[in-house]
Image 1 (cartoon, rainbow, N blue to C red):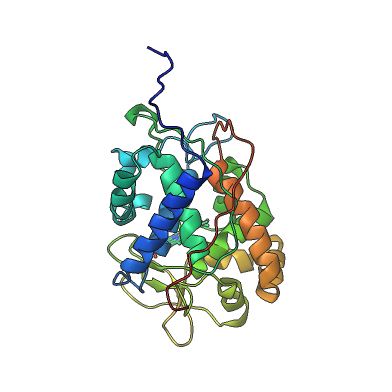
Image 2 (cartoon, protein in one colour):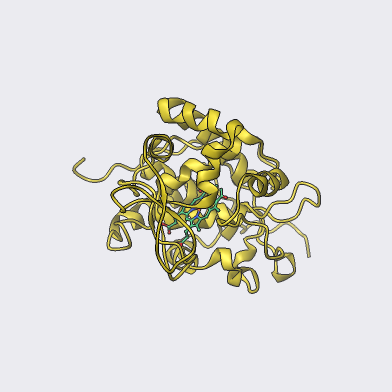
Length: 288
Ligand code: DDH
């Protein structure tokens, strides 16, 4: 045991590029899902895998990919993420040498970039853990709460106010599903394109409580868009609002900070051996 095995495959950058390209190709080939893309749910998988990190105990985070196991897969916050994990299974089968934890975060990077987001530097080095490393329930944010909760949850991961606001811009993407979180609807009109629209809508629209049987959420005048109580906390709180206004005015500033903070999120708690981060090229759609 532990002896050198000459047949062991040591992947290089070009091998990870192949994985990125395989995820991008699957995104393109499966546009019949939700608003036309698996991208948002892949992003949510990478975020929920990473956002369990606790700076104090150094537990949780993307290293381990423990959401493969119950009880973590059954935590309320992770409802619906099986769709993302299943989507990546054929990629894992094609490239069995990649760990789930590297695959999920690389797929998150790929999804952000293929949906028009900034380049997000990434490096390999995550190892998969067994069931004993599953994190306790309650480490991910609760959408019914407000600023105090946001600072407690994201502070535990090691993020400050500016980083909390920058991370939240991911809600330009995707939607809420009544059969997952209980909430309903998209945040923006283009939920498969990453833009600074989340911030612009928070600042520019009038938001009212939606009258319905579901959990308390906000709706815009047209009743087509939504905000969670945690989203509205970003404009109710003066410190958070500064950054919302900055990103609403300046998409380049948002993209720069977003790239930095997502890179940090996906690396929380990972014992990397490799220092160098790689940037992957967007795979252009044929004919565009
Ligand atoms: Fe989120 N998110 N999120 N979110 N999130 C939901 C969907 C998506 C919260 C609650 C919800 C981040 C932060 C927060 C994405 C990315 C990110 C849903 C709806 C709820 C509820 C799930 C469903 O019904 O399908 C709360 C609360 C917070 C917070 O407190 C800040 C962050 C930091 C990210 C990120 O990616 C960095 C994405 C993408 C979706 C859309 C998923 C989909 O299937 O579409």
